[in-house]
Length: 533
Image (cartoon, rainbow, N blue to C red; front, side):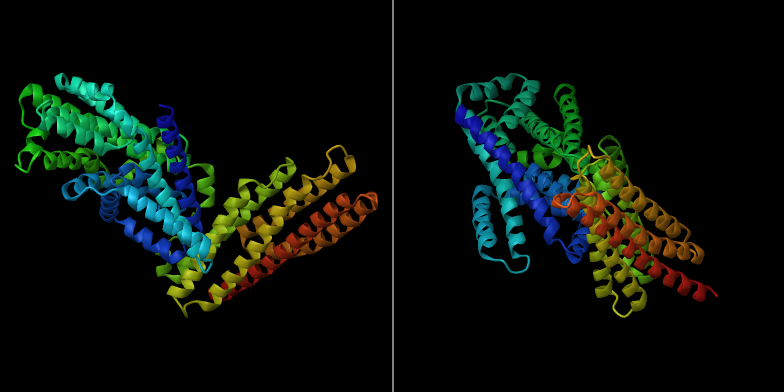
């Protein structure tokens, strides 16, 4: 039993590690073209459902497809709305493969680990290493599921396991409970269903018991996914809970229908799957396909309503909302001027994030997640502008170049803002002079940033003229602050002097870059005024 528990725990660890490895390397590898391609493939809910069905048939595990989809979601490759039908289609794929052949995903996982490991360690060109890491992550994820299944396999050979299944012959409710319990333990739908089919073929149980094994088995998997999802956050958790809830919904509908059929003698699901005379195995495979039908009807016919409902219960985290673009999107590239207008709004949002760095500095905290959020949005803006130039060469070149230049300034500005909290938190807190220095640096920078953001809001010539004057005065003021506090710091205290110099240099750079941006916006405002006249 210790070996069984160790194998299951190791499988769970590999599952989480594979998800993390896949999502982290997707962030590196996924460029704008691949992001656009994946987005368009998944944008049609029926096409996304088809991809999910294919993935489910290949992996023979709808939870595995769901976890891979969660990794894609966390890397920004797809949205939650696009992930729903992919996860939904995986259920159908598992049933379809039962009609064709049983594929041992253990072999595929081992090949993936081998090839991925070789690529990671031997190839350094381009994105080969990241692509190898993605393959390795998928393979580890699948092997984690295999390890859980194989570690729990001895349980199916125990007398109590077999006796439990045979006890279910007298109760379809007990069949449901046993199917859920055993699948939760074994972490695989096919072995439990196959064993049930074997019992039915030996006339130990009836078809209705096997149907209940199927329904219970899916519920057992849904419970497992629910447990895993509680370790996730935001839309990743939302997608995991979607898969689990839609399973519970389908199970509730089909269990009720089966009870009506068995005790009310009304031909419903059992009659449907046993109507074609294709043998017990294919009939049960058909039952697996039919299982998710209630959920498919609801989700594919009303995707927006479904997404709103799940987003209400499991909303996106603050970090997800801030680290994703709000304005730019792939469809905006169809019109260059619209795309550049949206980029301006996105850049403005990034500039507003910089106040968070100053708030962290006030509290004596490191930049934390704010740096990740700002840099992720900046990276997406860079990708957007580069792809816009590739798709629409020769259109609005002058304005696009101006926006690109502004983006570089904003990227450098973010780097300067991000170092302030790191530097200021290193100052001793028990020195009144250094506390005054910290306050003057933070509040002076904050005042300048707020003036700049107000001008960005007003966007008129007078506001930008005022900002230009303020930025020049602030640089001179910061030079005076540096000289005054360096004179107060002991010469032998190199660390304190270094922090004062680095912090004031960062603030001077901030004022310089804000002044550059001010001139950029002044020029754009002037061009707009000329065009309007």
